[in-house]
Amino acid sequence: MSSPDLTVIYFTASAGNKDFETEIRRTLLETIQPLNLPLISVSQKPLDFGENICVGDVGVSSSNGFRQLQIGANAAKTKFVCIAESDYLYPRQYFEFIPDREDTFYVAVPTWLFDVRTNVAQRVFRRKPQGDAGAMIVGRDTLIGRIQAILGSQSTWSDATLTRRQSAFLLRKSQINCTVFDVGVPIVTFKTDGQLHVKHPVVFRSKCTELPYWGSAESLARRYAV
Image (cartoon, rainbow, N blue to C red):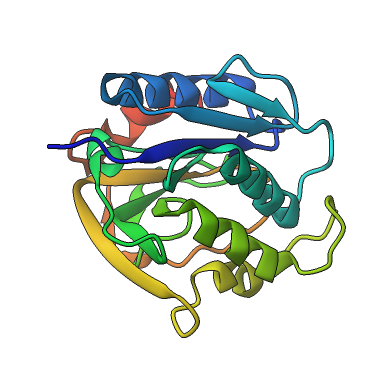
């Protein structure tokens, strides 16, 4: 199998649980190192993680998150980039995918939500119905242009928190080429205290306490200090 012409873009507001994000980064690095993929991290505090771009304390907002992602894509030297968020776990298969077209958003499934908020009685996994922008591969130039379309003439940094509907504009299927690809192994996104968006669409009947590859909900919570 040939190697994908791909750069991993990790971005974080540097405002979450430090132990949690450290373990997330350790897992990400262990996953991509055998694939020899370039890694760019865009953070609000300095990180020793790939090629780091520290943008400073610009504030936590979804619009700033999009801008950080755009900055990372601008720095990439490959045709394609893939997203690696600071509260996601990705299997190796996600990074091995080789896209066909630079103008298409390739969204990975299955993605499972792991709710670890302190007020939740039982820690369980629930499947997200269609994946999301936190696990996608796309042509570098296509992503840069799409984010510019979202943010428009907005100044470089903003405290504006986009609604979930506005954020979904990135993958609005009526305006972009978008396709889903199955990585076979679950992608896990954590739902933690203090996240910008409280509601996340899930398939409620999919509730379970163990996932293939990742193991039980309780063991995963202990491992990632949440």
